[in-house]
Image (tube, rainbow, N blue to C red; front, side):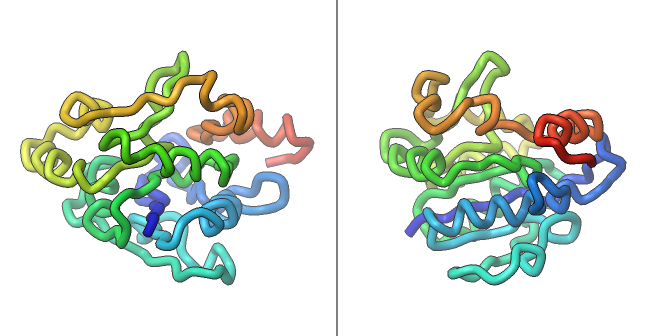
Length: 203
């Protein structure tokens, strides 16, 4: 069984605390786009941190149930969300995505999940660095994540020092689409306006 988790618990302070998962891109909300891509490649889909952000009802009817999972250790950012996803997943690996990534591609997610047996983490890397919120984590990450939470070492990227990590290069990503599109996210209103302008829509 494969799992996926959409991390939707952030406060979106750079976006006026708006629900970024509900932003419309090419006629559909980001969460609707994400769910449509993920349900074709996973058996278990979670929305982590549903108190702010995406909720199952926003995604419409799907072939699988969508579970809302809350942080077990609250107030710890993405590392806390990952911990909740690893604890609650029904599979042995989980694809984790931020709720503001509109262009998640099912074939790319399928590929990341398929190579997760080679390492505890599978993460894309571009000239912008690692992309830990578009990555796969296996059950082997649970204890290292819990230890970091207990010590309040919350930088998600530092987890890669603790467990075997498989880097996915730009060249490896390219067959699935332009990496800049696959990994695009919306952190600020300006980024959203730019994204919408490119698509011929108004924010």
